[in-house]
Length: 87
Image (cartoon, rainbow, N blue to C red; front, side, top):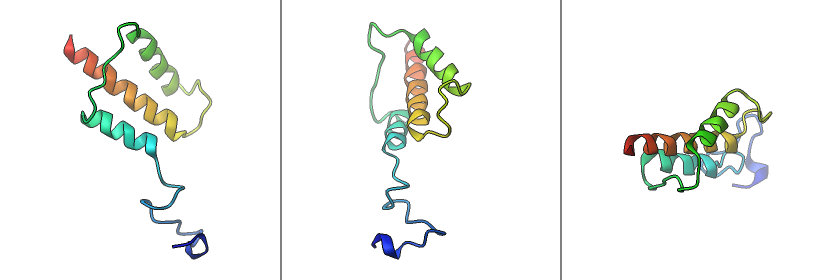
């Protein structure tokens, strides 16, 4: 399928259309599923991560509907939840 074959009104097929590929979201899915065992580094502050999530949710980064930011927030939440459950 070439770009000429794609109807701009319909868009492409999500699995092959580069406008729909979301590697950060895919990584967030894997982290949330437990596929990767990610933990906080010993020198990483949980409070700093919680502050990052709070700012992102409040829209303080001025990145409207940014898939990378959304995926990062999902990953941070998963790491924090994993950290909370280990304590």
